[in-house]
Image (cartoon, rainbow, N blue to C red; front, side):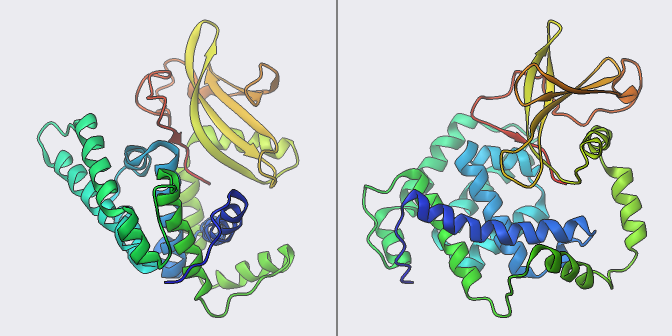
Amino acid sequence: MQMGVDQSAAEFMFIQSKVDEVTQFAHDLSLRYVRDDEMPESVINVSRVNYLIGQILNGGFLQFVHNSNWDKKFVAGVRNGLAAIGATEHLTVFDGAAKMIDEAYERDDGTLDAARFRASFDELEQEHLSDSKLSQRLDMDVDDSWTWELRWQIAQVMNAVYIGTWDNVRRLPLADYEQALDRMVADVPDVENRRQEYEAARPWEKRIIDRFVAQLGLDYVWYTAFSSREYNGRTVWCWNFVVGRTVGEGHHHAIFVDGEAIIFKGDTDEVAARMPAPEGASGSGVARNEPEQEPGTQHPNISILIDNP
């Protein structure tokens, strides 16, 4: 494969934007209650590879394991995606790591020696993402100037090349795009039942945040990751989210304490809103939808992502 791609930061951002457009399309379909197995397989391939690479670059393979819940269908989708885009070397690394994770789950205690795993994962990378193997795969010179990040990022370039092979792809203005999506899902069966099931399963914390976003006159919220925050002498879980369609616009933190939701403007102490949250009161009996571990104890190199929508 002759890719001929200048690996500058600006070039990669352009490549990533092509992938992001596809993953946004998949997300927009999901908001209309279209299930993954009802979407074009090629779209899911791109989305799964994008998720894997983002997780690895952000916090390593174990972050991917944690945030994907090692869901068998999701893992199979990642494997299919890597195969579809021709990222054979990355797939070999993935399969080697997956074997170790599966073996850990199969053990009675379900434990994984993280240090040993990382050492073995490093060996897989060194062997299969080597200069010689990537040079042969990409039909371009790969040498020791290529960083670890670039050796993984190149799979996103392959993702973009894969997108470029698609036929019948159209760009539409936003209004036309929304109408086209609506037409695509017009025949989706049991939409109302799906909507009710979705709302019933949705975390109560998100429903409260929805009300806050509605007060702003907006209809868009994008969740990022959990963090921890100090409040009244204790450490609590904090929900990070963005409102508005411009990246970085309207970053907020939300905590749920003592029967109340407190929403801050970003990581400042300025309170944007206080809202009733009886589900979060002590003794309410309502389960919280936050990480199981104590806030503040998460590994600094692992981000615990919040699912969207």
